[in-house]
Image (tube, rainbow, N blue to C red):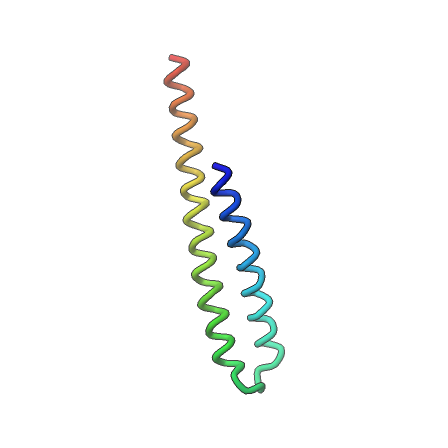
Length: 75
């Protein structure tokens, strides 16, 4: 399960970078290329947040499976 935590931490750092880029674009909307940069940052944010969500679901499934296996051993 540690690999999931490491992956989530890495993705979270990248997500924070995407948020920074989004905010930077919002603070300078008239700058040349701002719209393209904004769209790229939104795309990155969307992909990263989806990946984090997938890892969260995977972690939940693993934890549920561990509880079931523990309960089966006790019976």
